[in-house]
Image (cartoon, rainbow over the protein chains, first blue to last red):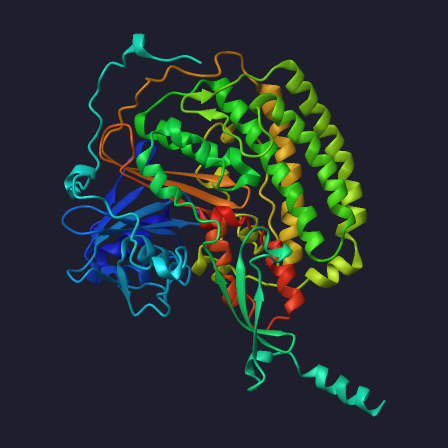
Length: 170
Length: 384
């Protein structure tokens, strides 16, 4: 492991944040973190101090609560982290737009699509959707489609012989 | 004449317009139909005379909710959508999307297909930079360069049209390979293009690079510091212009990029001029990649065996590629089956444009056009 990555992991562990390693070949990122919303801001400050950049902020509608997904990566080395945090009971999340200014638009977009309120955000107006669509929340799932958190967590694929005769060519 | 002298002294300390308290502020709408916003972007500007006090980009005019469509369709049905986000570099969007499924489902891709992908993707990158050079200079009032770059662009579009069937919104890659093989005619034409493009750089340099008006309008304009780039998540040539050599093709290599010898051009000052130089140099690097890929091109199938209906494992998967404008990341959450539970598309121009409010404070309006032009924005990509 790259020394700077080791430093990042130990800095995160000092904040008593559990970091799990992932197989990059299968997942496309190196570490994943499941986080409580309260620790988000200290995590973001730690990330910035360790020279990581914010790739994106997105939402994920699952039972029991909407999750906000943050991805961080490094400009200098191959190191990519996915952080998931469930929103608080009042459907809110602390903003990190004062730490990573780039999060400002991502949070506004997530507010458009999921209706999650980012507390202390400087300008939480609709960004992608029109003003009148403020309550549309287009990415919320219908009840029958909604899955439990555990149903969308990584489960190593079961080894199965590919059905060669059904395979398609051309 | 006395007035003139007074005006000159005024000019000397006009620089930080934002600090001058003034009741004469007014609002100016740049866009949504302004030619330099390349699509339908609106920037609401608070102005103090010729100086920008605050800029607020207003997005969403071209919004199609691609992420929702991604949750409703399997990969085959969503494939054409990927080419309709960044229409200027559609093949890289194809690449990221098929790469995502290949990674998640562990699908092997034949070597020839990977080489074809790299060759066509790099041709697409060149085309995108051609478009950018022409369009940016057109924004700044130089009409001639676009005639030259579009002449070159046509050469590549003809080559790509032969193999992909379209000239702009490509849908050429498939999970497991590509949908049509390249032939000797393609290889011959591509080699001829490489030779021709190398000769054309002299024209670009004579026309643009050394042009005193161009230099005066771009040097020191719109400086993005490395720290600012990190806080906003700026990627691509805009980031490399600021001196950070971050390129997904080198940092987290995908496809067969590790097999090629190429460099990542970087700038020093992070201004509009450096971003121009980075993109110009990137065309040459792409030519080098294509040249090596054509030399090494293996024989074999161009499309592997892929089940008709993919069985995705549950969980999430991410795939990043270096698109012409920066890092493009597809992030998929699967709940099993063949349709994604969630598809997040991280587009480079989105983060690149979000710098604008901080970047253009106290800037002249005409410099804003140069700074925005140098970012190479494609609005349908931002709006998705």
